Image (cartoon, rainbow, N blue to C red; front, side):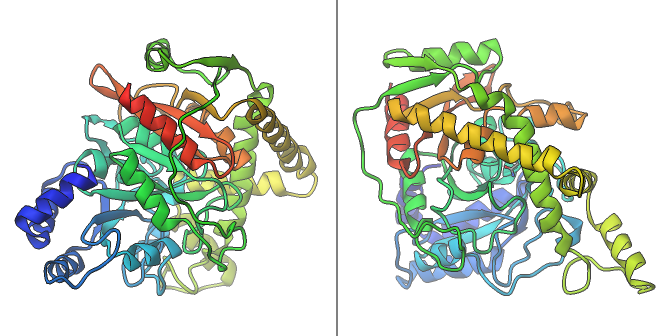
Length: 447
Ligand code: GLN
């Protein structure tokens, strides 16, 4: 449901009634998209809205928040056993902004554990199901945030994207999802997976809704040292120089649909040669950063703990052995290895060099073009349990990770269905040119 439809219904029936209906729908849902539903607080906020007490650009609008974004007094688990009882004492910057604009935080959405995955199958709380086919995955890692939009269990949602985690589930669930330019949205309160790659971003059922949510969450925040200190205001552009990135591909049926969508647009085809290093560089960098970030989970100050405290070493390893899932442990081990003395130069440093080549490729391309397009995902949503080995799973990110390595903004635009399953294309823009991306997406939607 779009924001305008929600507002219409609220006008007719009142916010309390509409939020109650939404909560009922969530209760009956088969999607497993929420880890926590904020029932009482949502009803209270809705009542306040009906009394005319709530002001702001998102007044009375239910927003779902990915469960790696901290919410004061509301459990924030990262879909991990390690944090299954963690109740933050502070709000993330983006949550402060939502509250300032009158939004209702309806719940916290399911995800891959610590964001590590492409299907939401690594969640400690079970897999999220695709609203278009319950036997298939919703994508990941922000699978819950995409599924609640497609399944009409929220009006807007926040996700986070380290290597595709907003765009992939948006593509698999047929919704809009934007990974903003690195530094546009504060990461204060985003529980880190790989800091140099990730951004919090808006997800929605329309471009207008997405633009509004981005306007609310973007902006200056001194608590994130990488914050660019600039806001976002959507302004429409009409002219674009468009290029298709030929070495970002997908299955034939998706490519056919992709080119159908571009029919009527003038575009050139280009290749970015260093993209062949992107997947390897991404996984080395992401796992290295993860291994360092996740070292903080020692079961002492917060998070999962075990009762008998024997020696420090035993305690620490038991907490981590029991608290982390398999994929998280795999990445901590591989990341520690890549950063270890003797291997640092061979893996981590080399990955950083490849990252620079990729940045330069994009920089050159944006000298000639405003918009680069590709399919978002190489395949349609797969069956739950279908992807068994990690490497096959990692390869699914081939079109999305280059954007994170370069820190660029990119949007998934839904372009219809193949055999009842959603397909999306990825629209990439130059730094801080989210407005151009959204304007182009509007044109696609109108064609
Ligand atoms: N699938 C990618 C990974 O597992 C991306 C995840 C993300 O963006 N959080 O690292």
